[in-house]
Length: 94
Length: 431
Image (cartoon, rainbow over all chains, first blue to last red; front, side, top):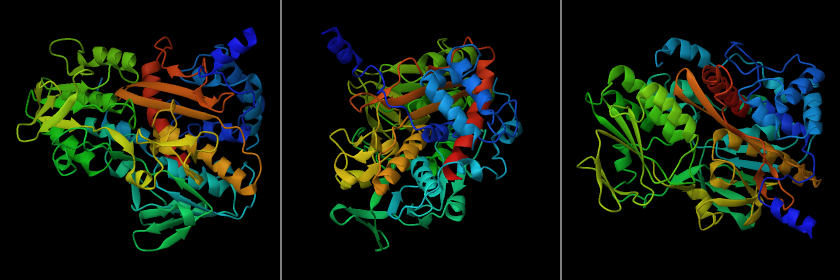
């Protein structure tokens, strides 16, 4: 019974299905903002040239609030560590 | 506060050189046969066409759009502060046609013949499709405010589809008498760009603070609250004396007594109970529905929007038609250009999966919306969206939300990111 209750509580309150998200699609969403930078200080940083481990470390640091960011913590918290690793690998291989 | 020079702003806004074409080069490029027609060349339609073109060179992709150039709604409020102009907000479809193999048809859709899976265009041309992606945008509900018609809107602009009306409204603001009043009649939910009316008030106040400091903007709202309200109100207090008698912005919730009538002759709007508000400049943003094309094709529900299966963005009323962007019911995602771009990417991957008859990948969606309170004070809201166990679209718990004032330098940084993300999203969508 508790299990059923938990399942009911989860409906509509933002718990995700178990399936992992396609890293290609995640990467496409990253690239909406992270394209080439022209005036580095004021721009969203570009990802070109970053290694998979750098991107992965940054994403995990944003997610667990180890590194301050205006926006990225709010985004990174929406994904599992595994998804962040997969998208970092994907972005670095572009 | 509002002193950032136009030149500096424009430098930051200028689109960088080409060179991002390879951005999608790492994605698998396979070849599938199939005719996909995309209707509507806004952020949703352009992104769908581009993503399809970059993921599958074998598709036959046609984009139907009546206008040769698209003027972006994002950024259009910046015009009221004198920070940009229509030319800088315009984009064409050349990169899509030259680099992504999109067949651009400059025409509009007369009707969708769903049984035959074909479109009848205004020119008389017929276009057949295996899959149709509709990103047709919004229509206005002209019954919502008596006396406010498409003709009257040429005098009292809504300016909610960026273009000549945006310029007209900016001219009216800039020419307003000393100490005059601007009325903004905000729309009921759901509508395109939830923070838009409040960014508009901010950018108008930015102009008034320099050129007409005794002027006032009064927002008359049929809602009890609005997007990013705490951030907007804190910014208005900081820059525009919000809450004080001589403040530049006033916000009034008229949730139980909304504006229902315009007396154009008297430059007055009238509420349900007969309260009258007069203004020197009147900006009425009417209630909205999905574009007429979607309504005429029977793809909308009683609320006026197109219900879809989120995973594939397929219409609940037609399995060969996908609907994305503002016209689609993707709640709890807001109706924004960023959301349309994200919906388009998931839609393109789903369309390819369906054409190849393989499993459609599990999607994820993102929304990020920046607003400017001054040219140097930006705020944002973000959301990560996914499917729950019942395949419904949900905001992922614990993610997303508003800018945190606790981040040092956040307001200035986010003002820079607002321009940067605008520029990048434009490039990501239109090439």
